[in-house]
Image (cartoon, rainbow, N blue to C red):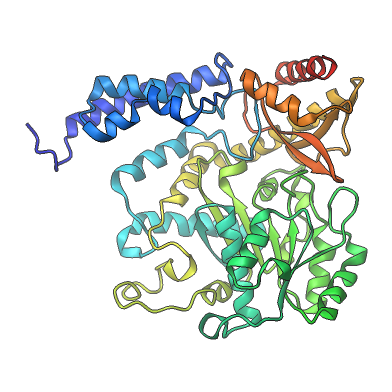
Length: 463
């Protein structure tokens, strides 16, 4: 018998085969819409079904018991590949990204330090070089990190270093501020608090009725901050906004920031992937004027969570974000280590997921995926506005559509759909009014799905 502290290769092979078979069946069933898109048993009930306490206490799982456990686990999971998955901005991952997760799970090369994973780090360097080229930062630098919230924090750390170089060692000056629209992702105000500015240091910019930055009134926002004794360290724009999927007008905003010496940060977590499409890249016109951009691969590039890029126009700006020494880490391959650019010391093989999707599908293939999801969302808008009782406050620019049915409780409609497991969608406020919200993510979503959703919502709203 193999000692339990040594990896049993035969067990691994058998369990891996079970895993592949189980996942293949799960994705096939999901894509076919043959199971509920979501199940939400209470945690206590679900823990009992999965036998969690017993397995934790006793151990002893083997290939067959693992097969049964995996089937139960997958049956209770939310199905991103399902045609009725229309909820959060999380990818229906392609299989090359899944292979990357599998590889990393076995070799575990945490490559913020180059010597811990030279191949993994080198793949990330090249993926970043590709992303920087798409943004228009030929002299820029970057790092991949675990999610858009951490990416926004990292980019704003670089902005803080530019505005207050001594903040890392001496503390944060009390007059720093951020300029951002009220529709900015919550991670912006969270970053302000973590950075020591405080939430009240986020000065709201004037916006139109759909939450987009009003370019003509940018000066008013800057004046408000200065009259309050604040020194804005950055201005944040959305490409695209999380709630509505609408893009801010980046070029005039970038020109305003350049004129007034403001760091221009673009939260492109969701919408930067439109750069890969001929028909939608104009939505990011002016992104090259930014000082920093974030771009999540785990939203529109079919990459499993998490893989978010922090990209800066001047490479040295990111190197200035963190200023620390630790004799047990900061040595050796200083020219290749990424630890000086990221919060994480142990960092997953994030670039490998993006790389394998590119290697399999190509840049054009990923661009076609983005364009296809944008087109399906636009089709939903066309179908909804043709039906009595449905109201759409805007024509979609991305794969996100907000809408209402009637004047009833939209949240109650959503809750019924979730309880049924028939459709998974979210909601958002537009102009202070609660709307239902569709995010087209799964390639399997088609006109039949959209028509069925509209039919079901109408039946619930009329009940």
